[in-house]
View 1 (tube, rainbow, N blue to C red):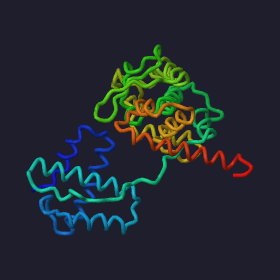
View 2 (view 1 turned 45 degrees about the vertical axis):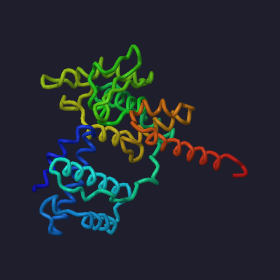
View 3 (view 1 turned 90 degrees about the horizontal axis):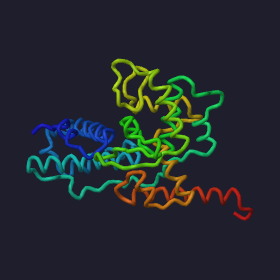
View 4 (view 1 turned 120 degrees about the horizontal axis):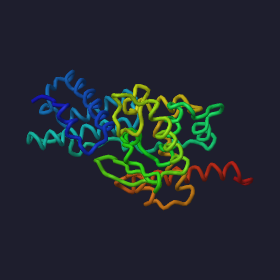
Amino acid sequence: MAWRLDAFAASLTDASPATASAYRSDLAGFVEWAERSGAEGPEQVDRILLRRYLAYLATRRYARRTVARKASALRRYFHWVSRSSGTPDPSLGMSAPSGEGRLPRVLSREELERLLEPEGAEAVTPVALRDQAVLELLYGSGLRVAELCGLSTADIDLARGVVTVWGKGSKQRLVPVSQAAGEAVAAWLGRGWPGLANEDSPPDAMFLNARGRRLGPRDVRRIIDRQAPSPTHPHALRHTFATHLLDGGADLRAVQEMLGHVSLQTTQVYTHVSKERLLQVYERSHPRA
């Protein structure tokens, strides 16, 4: 039986493109290792071989979260193989590190201000107008990068101050748009979009790159790299959005809804971030801390 990694990746219709790509890459690494160990297909993989692979990853000093993701990819894959071929699932009962322990990075107020309002820069060119709208929307609405890149012009209602987002598993949600983000998006669509568009541009794409094509995740990363005062992952803006809401007294379930989390437990990590920030403020400010 062949490994059929492409068919498995195509079956991940409820996962984001980034997750599907990560799983495909993780499994390719496992297949290369398994074939060196003598396994020529998934039917020749047993629980012992999977445990040996996880132990191998540990010796290579992979982070706990990385090992946890690779184990998740293996479980998902072998469950799919079992359902499609009727062979036993060797991943049943397989344990791996939970991946917990590392809190999301939250930008400081100074970092955020320098990112959104870089010194000596004015949003007047089409690229500058686009960059400002991208950054304001990422932080102001807490969007995932893939969600932002997939937006169409019809998805945003500036009059109502909301944006319709298509999240993981093609689930739709409405998210508020901040005043600053709304103004930046209006400026981009009115004065910037026509300056980057060409005859090959998708007419409904919210954001375009320098070639007039739909903006992609790599383009977003370059925007942040250009304007951030220190190395910043695009997802840090989403973390910062959620943490600032909770710091301001927002209801946890409301934040869950805005983030598009299926489980409240996923959102609860931000309560730990907020508590950590409160402790830091206390230790810096209280004379007896």
